Length: 295
Image (cartoon, helix red, strand yellow):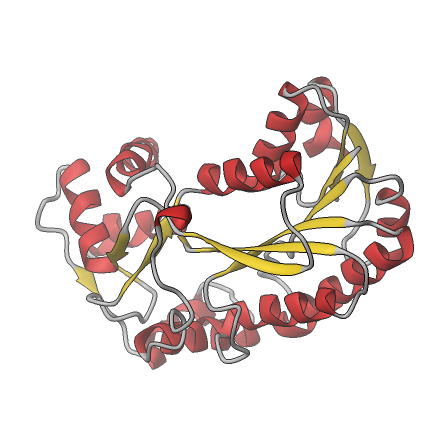
């Protein structure tokens, strides 16, 4: 039995589907029975509850061959970092209580450091799992999700620019498609080829700057001159607050951007062949263009 948290999300849903296609038993964990229904129709078992509830999770993790664990985004949390820590402690406590032996987590580039804003919670999560004796944990430190760029469609249409994150346009970082993350996670879940506490990077087809990514997206949507505009930290925070982000979340995104600009985010990362995944920004751009036209 494989147990997948965040089973209705980008990575969790795809992992569940691949495992089911491989003939494995899967327990899909989510907050909404309705949203889990498509996975149940494909053969998954549902566990409906919240990831801050350790007792619920301990029950869901019973008899698990392995668990895929993540801290899903909660953009409405009053204190974003406190929310991350609650979920991380609940998952770790449930893993210990249920006697789970193998765990693959969705972590992030920058999780080596507590100074990376929204990623710092994943640093703490990795550390929490490291306290549990006798288990094998593989932390997938994924690059910047290509899908994050879909959130910029509005500003492109309204202002004719790409921007929002206060990250300098020339800063290169790994950019990865979420389906590639799911493929890597599933491969390790099936092989159980990791021991102790370890991590690997899931880095996409190549490292890119936001300026380079914007050029590809612009060409694909018929706006070859589309510029990447780096907002100031103050303007970026003000924009997030205007869009309803809690202040703690806005502050953590600003800190994440500072970490990228100052080289903290990727100081533990160097591209290697084993970190490379197939989907290119050019392939993602076709998905982006379809969403741009539909919106």
